[in-house]
Structures are given as structure tokens and as C-alpha cells.
Image (cartoon, rainbow, N blue to C red; front, side):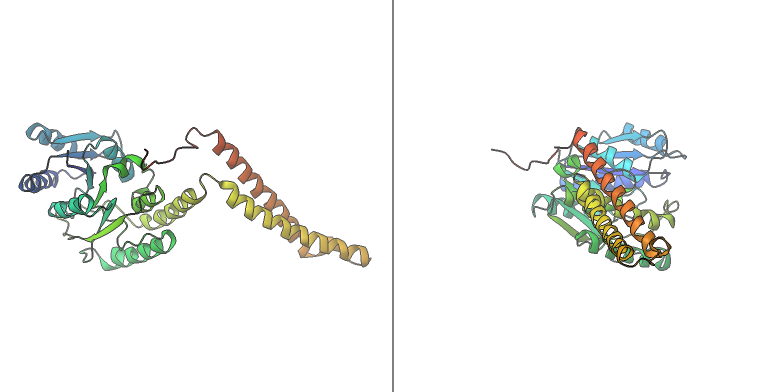
Length: 311
């Protein structure tokens, strides 16, 4: 199979027939073998009823329904599990992503050799204050911290080599950072394509202001897990050792002063408590790193490495 199109959806009953018909036209005109996987993330409207009707009229459409709303990351991850195509393309169900972009996204994977291609909505029709400006800040921060040079990290329109989606796991709200996850999994040929951003025709946006706070926290989380997930002692042990030595140096200085200056009241000085706090925190951080290493050693996937080729 050439292409699997994964579409996560939540309360999108009005746009689904038009979206699937559009995808079908593009696939037929280009001669692709394909499937469309619609993942209903616990919709409260008639989206699942529409999906079932579409499946009856088109054998290329498959559907998955969650019992409740788990989030876009869970929907994408389930779609990746079900995908059979050599190239996997994701897009949102609200018709703001154009299926006409599929052929070029497919060719960039198959012909140009990219592992993953992310869309870039260079011209957006969202509110400048609530989406455009925060999005630019978010993307600039992510580029700086992760080293993945993309302008629109969270664009729903992306294409992947099949090996990529089968090797990564998307959970929580990590769908924003799939390029970063792919990079840390060893897939470094990540490209970008300017895509058309269409105005929303039906429904309302499913994301509010909380996405900016959650997005920052998720970025910190993924950077930590990617760099220190298998070696927590390198982080906690290093910081803990430095803090302990700092506190020990203070304690040594105060002890020296107490011995040689009999009138010196060590416990009345703020420096004494600072040194004591540093040693306690240093010991706790070191033990946290040690416990992290013990947990990591007993993990069943501690030696789960991705092999690119073997002769």
C-alpha cells in the first residue's frame, strides 16, 4: 500500500464527508493505493455515525472509536499502530489542511529520501493575537532547545516513512513534538514544506489557552526524557554532587572559623543554614539519580535500540 492517511477527529461530523471525498479524488487522480484511518477521539456528536456510513460506501476507509476523549496524541498513536502504508500522512479533520498537498508530501518521502516532512502554514487565517504570535514564540523556543529547524512544529499536516511511525510512541500531549521525538529516535532527515492553511468552515477550535502552558511543560519533559531517560544519574548525580560539595565547603569554612575564633557563633549565621540546605539537597538529588538508575536497570526495554540495517 502506498499511503495511509491518519485523521484524528473530535466532533467533526459536518466536515468528514467532504474531507473523505476530497482525499479520494486526490488518490484516484494520482493512482495511489491507500487507506484512510479515522480515529474518533470520543466525540459527543454524531461523528462516529458519519464514520460508519462512510465505511459502508468506501472500502478504503477504516475507523477507530475511543470510549472517551483521550486527546490528539492518543488518537495519532492508535492510527500509527493501524497504518499499513509505506508512507503515513496525518491531517486534521476540520478541512483546514488540504488533501491536495498529499502528492508532494508523498514524493518528498519516496523520491527525496526524507524520513519525515512537516507542513509549514506560512500564511495563517487564525487570530494573530491568540494563535499567530504565541505560535511563533513557541516554535522559536522549540527550535532553540531541540535543534530541529522547523517553522511550524505543531502543523497537523505531516508525512512519515512507515518505519518512523512504527518506531515512536506518542502519548500525553506529545503530538506537538513528533519531529523532536523522531529526531531522538534516530530519524534525522526531517524536511519542511509550505502548505496551504484554509479557513475553518465548520465547528470551533478544540484548543484553548492552556495549550501554551501544557506545551512548555511537555517540551521540558521530552527534552529531559530524550537526553537523560536512560542515564538519570548523569543529571541528578552531577547536580547533587556539586550541591553537596558546595555545602561541604561552606561547612568546612565555618568549622575553621569556629576553631580559630572562639567567639565565632557558627549557628547564628545564615551561611550555616545555606550550607546545611545544600548538603541535604545534594544528597537527595544524588539518591534520586541512584534510584532512577535502579529503575532503569530493571526496565524491560532498557536495551531497546533501533537498528537501521544489519548484514
